[in-house]
Length: 213
Image (cartoon, rainbow, N blue to C red; front, top):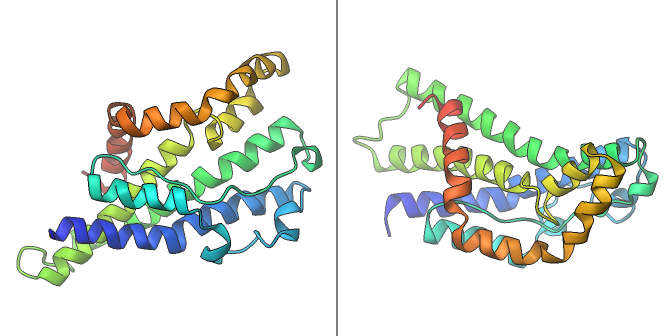
């Protein structure tokens, strides 16, 4: 097993234990602050990875690491009652955007560590296998979070980007868009199979900007 595959699987494990819980906690916290306490009552206003784990979404993320290309996956959706939210559809858009935003923040924080390590010569991947593995893990953490940010903001139901889209368009346009919700899962399957050319360039540009590549 190559060092890069091992590193990507380690990074995926960290995402499952930390990244996904932070993503869903961000949704729950935003909803809670905007007046909907559904997630709090159901125990989802938590960073416990056990309450957020989704076997299918987690399995697809692991498969993404093994297959290579792009990283996509998801945790158990945070329950939100839009009727309780301040601002109506706009509030729902804010709650939906909070999750992907957390992925971008996590990517940026790890990217800072990558830049510091690179500038200070704190690791020597050329001569140390341990340093090489750590270097790969850090870079994969940035890359995976970036891809999850891009993936979740795609305007496809039931992804976060779909709810963000409904929150920023007019009510009439939102009603028209909702007619296509039934095709959401099919679109995600197609995206998983052939979506790399769509997601990869966007994710790679954001990744390069963050790490200074």
